[in-house]
Length: 483
Image (cartoon, rainbow, N blue to C red; front, side, top):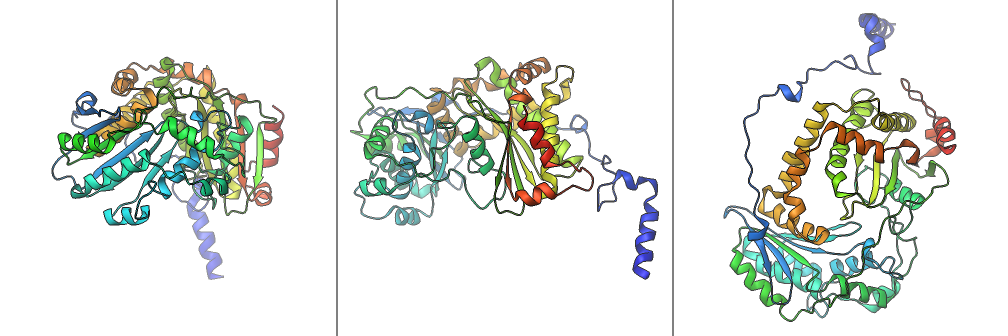
């Protein structure tokens, strides 16, 4: 009886405001004490990025590098090898060869090496960090300043003399393309993203089918193109001497063969025609995960800065709608392709408890439609925040430290053939207007072109109803499948 009285008393104390609060919360949904960013007092900032021309170095073999010396007090040196390696570089008959070649580079070590790669890395107190995208793969390691020579020599060995072991290649079978367990929404291994790629475009947007084999000839051909001296670009950043790095690179790359014009034309991402606008995949999981997206081909350079601003604004709106207002998810994000052509996947990523899955789809699609609607404006405040994020956060962070700048320059050289676009980015962003953002939203965000994939415990998701936002997955599926 006492506990009942407490509950009744607590409910009575809420008064008429009970309908304005989330379940389990006492604070009204829309009430917060956050300052508008424009009200925050911030002093002037100045940032001068390193000069890529001063950092550039080329060896007699044609190998290129960006060497960015850091402060003597910097604790580490970052060593990077950027490679024109990814599914968009695979020629006919080479499907799956880029992922396999990356695996060989980062697990087997250089051909004929005396010690296993794992022991050589352990001796340096480091490990390899590999980032694979559709058109660029980069391999990095951090070492102590006194170990940069050994680390750089090892990195050159890895990409100059890969161990293309025939038995390993024959035994290889392509995996599913996604990672398990189902948790989090980050990375290319996010299962709904891969399922979406397969349904709307297939290979090369999506990984090759599971079980795909790769021939030794295909791996050798791709390696000859992607790992030639004039195709690889190195980045060295930290407390190093540019002259000393140049001497080590010249020695380590001497005699390395150039490509001889073997570079293949980069494949083009094309949008396929999905059977329906909705797909569900039953996966044992505590939560449901969602990808809503479409494929786009080459994006004109004139659209790139406005599309990047759109990415920030839509991600901000998605998180306000899904997280801040409704408490449905920790994150509701939007991403755009990062390839040299701009082609790839426009993607909303999110996920949550079974009862949150259908509402997340509903309100995410609503935000896409609102952004696409010509009568729904983009505000100057949104554009200002987007510009600040694109330049003062993302761009500046990529160049602020010697370690990050060296990697950024190397990747940019491989992806765009130089650093002019990178260094001109602040100017391109500064010229973006709200009308520009609205124009690219009209061009790329037609909700009818987007496909939704849900992966998770489907029986629980279909039966669940959120106590405040009771959207049904079956109703959404019928609506989206009928497009």
